[in-house]
Length: 196
Image 1: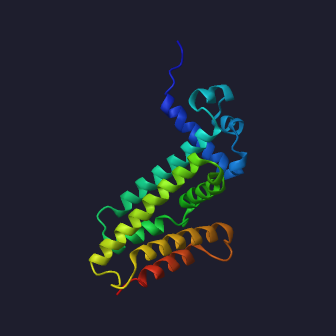
Image 2 (image 1 turned 90 degrees about the horizontal axis):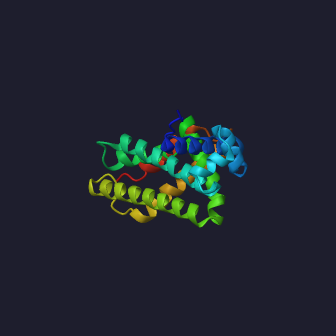
Image 3 (image 1 turned 135 degrees about the horizontal axis):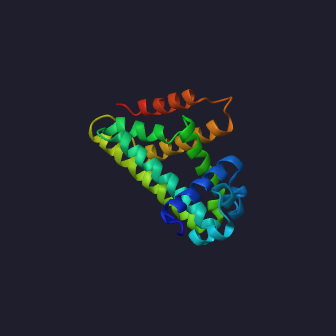
């Protein structure tokens, strides 16, 4: 009797294997052959599930974004204003092993996205979603009197997002100069400066 294959599970396994290759060896090493080997499949079997390597990479990026979004939604359930904003911003920093891996994956895609319109579109859509969420939370915090009346919410949103990106890169690139506790303290200090 032929073996019954769960095709969705097989696709998830390939995407997870691609993520492991990227995190361990770098995005340039994530060839179709390397991904297939990591997933325990042949290149031929791999081609039944994905048309090319870029499709696999795009799926890995989307899978990571979906996992992050689910985790953040869980964390902010029942929170409002600055409390919710604090959770969103801190969750976007690589403060533990899970988020460190997610950030490494994300950063790995940045340079590749400059040459791939499909990857760039996914990156930009996710960035727009995060920007919209941060801006909306700031507006709700301002309406609740948690933010200075003179604060420009658009500029503040960009500053906070730039701080997330900068702190994330510093944590990855300069671990002896900046620790997770430092990044957390700096982010919380930026939020405290918004108070009236």
